[in-house]
Image (cartoon, rainbow, N blue to C red; front, side, top):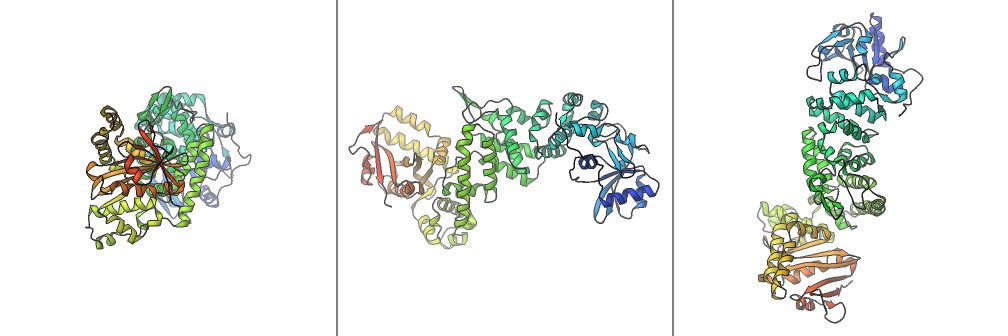
Length: 601
């Protein structure tokens, strides 16, 4: 059981609080600091607010103080303003029936402090303090603070029936204070957890966020044990117990997510991202040969995270930030500035360090093998990010040397085409920052047939083009059934995967895709893959144009050499482009020729 470190001395009240209490006492009324502020002061924490309870009626409080606000006068609360600060002063009261499970239908004012304190939720929140009268601790709150216990005042079921939100608040306080929940209190929580359905989503969101931002967000597992998350966050329950049988994980999806939240820094967007980053895994789980995988879980999870956050009534910026970080938390990074620039273009300059922080926390919640492999890579990405900023390399449209007006002047009509060309130019410069020059870019993109960087929206047409080449051209040299099987592999999803593995270039004429080719890093080498050109575009310079783009890509230049597997159909073309057979003499291996080309330094 946890133990709270509390002061043996009595709290020291702020001067303004003492002024309020003194004025009420001078007028013949009782007055005490009460509730959470007394609890925090005893724990040597700085209270966020100081609340005061008094035997004076609301109208009497208003008569005593010049500046007041009727913040909750129906329930006996008046806010007293002193030097610009507000202090809530509430009359001793007895609460009536709670028919809505949240607020009393009516309240009865009393002059008895004990009656007021016994209506409160937990013993640690049911203490009052007056400098001259001392600490009023009628329900053992100080002892529970010292023992580190969350315990209801009186009958737990009665307290939770009055206000169902107290069920979630119990876990939240356990998270903030590092306390345990007393057994009878916990049993009542489990019994009455379904009543949380009566609570507004805004209030649920507030409590969950406070719990996530606490020192012990892992208390979410306590909430799950009590049946709370089944009501307020059922998507998390779907993750608990879902296995992750692979060398990079050592926990189920739910516990991994909670541990990731514990590892990440205390920030609302980061903690919610950490909790929800794998929320798409139950919907994408695939088990094969005893191993678990979750293809597409980040994209699926981003959509589900947005749905959850909107249900909980989060603000737009939080929804946007969490959704974006969830979508890209599993991005297939390569240790290059080009890759860093690409991701910066997707998430933004300010969000990129947050993405790395989520990735770091995600890794810390994985196996030793994952830590050994991924943590050094994240450090390297941080270094590359700083290099991009220091060099002033382009990663967004405002940094592009070409503006819309430049394209209009060059003859491009205003409208969608102009925006698409600017986006294509940005993608080009993300790979080739040295070409962020107005003349170079406009000249390149004014060519009738030009190379561009593949974008996700090109996937369908690219896959269709590849399948057509395989079935109309390559069947001249290979069995048709083999080409059909290969064509079936080139789905939109696999084309996007190929682009993520390295860089996929397109040859385009107007809006039409004529060909494609990918540069992929493999063991320090640059391997060219998936080079296809439509039949009607062959022998017209399209293949040459694609090879020129691939051979000048940063991956190829860094490797100093390009390697490829030439088909029977394409062998002659590559020989004309100065590619040599790797073994010296032509030799077929699995139906292809291994070829290579040294690049000029």
